[in-house]
Image 1 (spheres, one colour):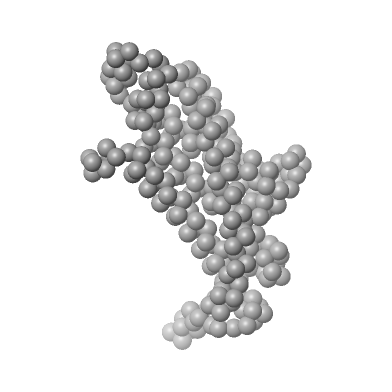
Image 2: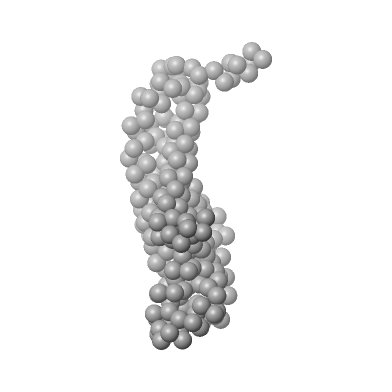
Length: 238
């Protein structure tokens, strides 16, 4: 019992002792929290940029596949193959081509969003009832008008669900972006640049990991709130 209490005790130590003893030290966290603001902003930049680029690419591919159904299989196969590449391996494979920095990290992270976004967009579009599409065309809407005024609004819940998954997944993968020189919160855990002599310890992991979890939850809540505002009829049904 004493050993359990000793292991879970919150110890107030100096910075050097906290790092050396692998401790969870509130004082160290309070004194060093400001060091995580720049990595947090880098993490936000990597996540939002990658998901935005991935959404544009996936949305374009989904619209093409929606009109030419035979393309769905090949596109899913290619994006699925990209998704199965281990993240660290993807960073190292790109390094000789694009060099260290944000570009390499963003390319790899974008590739991981494509399968999630493409599947959800195509699923949403194909889930629109055929009779609804026929009715819109019977009212004189063109194919383009039907897409933008009928199909996409009805597919929006599925599309936003995919966006939520892509954002939270990318937040997690972006913690490995420091392997490509992209910075982010992962650098504070693993790298000597974190100012801990290259040692990761309890306080450091708790702060960096906690901020990553908080960021993922924040993005999820923002998209969920946007979904409620964009789909008032669903609120009425609820």
